[in-house]
Each structure stands twice: as C-alpha cells, then as structure tokens.
Image 1 (tube, rainbow, N blue to C red):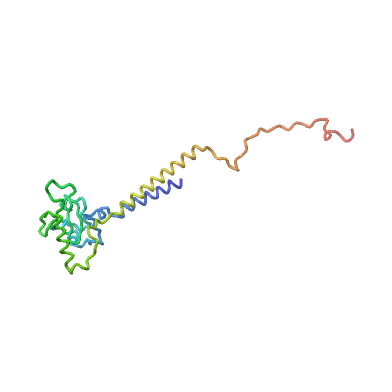
Image 2: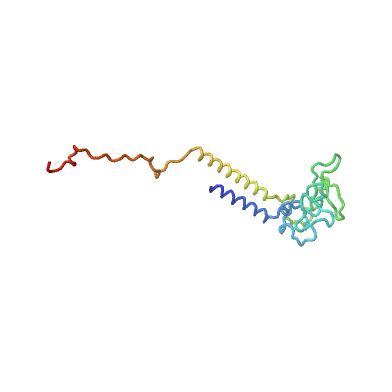
Amino acid sequence: MKLLFLIIIIFIFIFNEKKLIEPIIMSCCGGMIRNKDYHETDSEPPKKWERCFKLNEWNSFPCTDIKSDKCCGGKGKCRPSRIGGKCEIKNPPAGTEPNFYYNASGTEVPYTTEAEREEMDKYLKDPRNSDDDDDDDDDGGDLTYIFYYFCGIFVLFMGCLLIYNYIRNKSSGPKLSIFATSPDVPDVPDSPPSSSSPFNQSPFN
C-alpha cells in the first residue's frame, strides 16, 4: 500500500513538473535557452544562432521551436557557433552541400567545409574576439527528457516491486500470530460425583 502511494506521488510530481516547465523552451531552435542565451524582449536572435534564420523570422516569445519551418527554413538542424551558426541537412540531395546559412538579406547560402574553416580562422585571428567564450557548436543539451527518462524507470521499478510483493503475500497464505486463538474445544459436562467418593459420605456413617 505504501508503494502504491509513493508511485501516485511521483506521478503527481511529474505531471506538475511538466506544467511548470515550458516544453517549447526546452526545444528551441538550436537549443537556445531563454534568459540565458536570449531574452523575450530581444528583437534579433542571439549572435551564435543568427544565421539559422531568415530576416525577421525569429520569434523570441517564447522562442522559435526546433520543428518550426522558420528554424533553418524547416530543412535542417541549427548548429550554433561563434561565427553565427549554420544549418545542417541530415540527408542532403546528391551533389549539394550538407550545410547552409542565411546571409544578412535572408538568402540561403551553401556552406562548404572550406568556407567554414576560413571563416573560423579569420574570426580567431581578430583580436576583438579574444574575449569570446569557447563553447563552439553548442547543441544546448536537454536535461528535462533525461529527468523524465529516469523517473519513468523508477516508476516502472516500483510498480514491478509492488506486483512482486502482492504475489508473494498472496501465495504465502495466512500468517500465524502469537495472538491467534486456539481452536474451539467442545465443553464436557461435569459428571456427578460418585457415591463412593469420600467427599460424598456423611461423617455420621
């Protein structure tokens, strides 16, 4: 019974957790996180993600979802970087580049590995970028799904344990107790005393 109560509490906690955490925030385009990488009042996407969007297509409230057609035009996955990010196509058509980005005018530009290397070298040689952080190509890992995954495993384990205890208790039969009453014994009527008994004889005989 206690295990069942614990499982119910865990389910209630997970349900409330899903309501408190906005799922769309955890699936923003390129893994960006609100109030860390951007704010809802920003009119432009963060620098590391800016080339994953066409002009004026980024939504800061609450964010542009990873599955939106405005995230890399719905054709690829946004890969943020210090030079503005890129869009990675999972299965590009034959003869085309697997990566592209949107320039300042919103035009899609094929992005070769050589061009990316040249841009990165130029960026690193610029002394104005020496204080920039080194978290390049950050996918913004989503820990919420990992949390739900382990919670699901725990609930499944507790459910199996509850079923096991129920089957074991049912198969073991009733337990003996020191306070158990003894089986009823039929009452034996008292037999009348024998006439030959010394207690039955008169003292004057």
